[in-house]
Length: 361
Image (cartoon, rainbow, N blue to C red):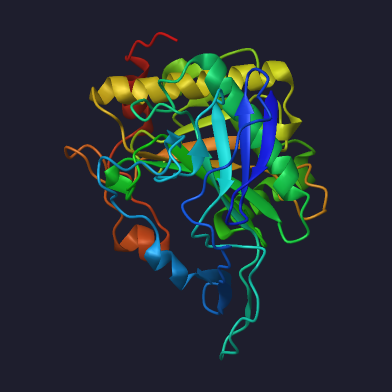
């Protein structure tokens, strides 16, 4: 992997990644020249026991731009600058112009609940220069490069004092609120471990302390032993499956078989297999629906809080969030308000549909 670090005219960082060398003559475009100084803060929710982020400046972010304007497309036109330059790069990462979390956060308001600056980082990951494709349709070696990019960002962001959890994700489709259709994801680097990850880690830690083994690794072994009916892909180093406890129709987990704490801890062979598993799942999604499948993809990894986390097992979770053609599920009061999911379909049935989709890498 080759990378080139640049600075935009408004002070934000841009990193270009490629499978081959990058020329040092590339320049970083920027929608403006005024240095960006966003501010956000966190408020403590006393009943839920968690932080809530407040970033009102995001009301001014790009929303449903006209078709002729793509802020994530490469450009050489100084009169109409976007976020990335023209050039031989494959993946671009830059600081979000409208971040929820920022190292610049300061002076939170004094309220009746505890507050703190909304420090951390929010980055945009442009998967490719091609606006017409998708993550799943990228060549396998390009997906493999993205695994390296996510791993590199985990290490670099996780080394910061204001970051305790690095969270790459992708929202795909208007059904989940996407307004920029160029293939891209984001990375949030939180100053705390977010609630869902914290709960998963607590269960993993309790299992590790009782048995001296990883919870997810044990679960994957049980799924394999039980039979192939929920497994979409099983390689030498990685697996993709509809978990027996899936809360969403077509929910899928992609994980290394070995209990590696983060993508950065994976060997080259493991990264190869994780990329293959991820691409297969995304092709099956689109093949099943014969149209772009709307999903949310999230990465769960070890916190970067300076503490050992032998219990952590990096993995990807993919799930749809909204109904499409009456085959997916709306989140309702039980799910949103109580956190109790009612599954209207069986994981085995949804896995059978996905397993039946033939894909070619």
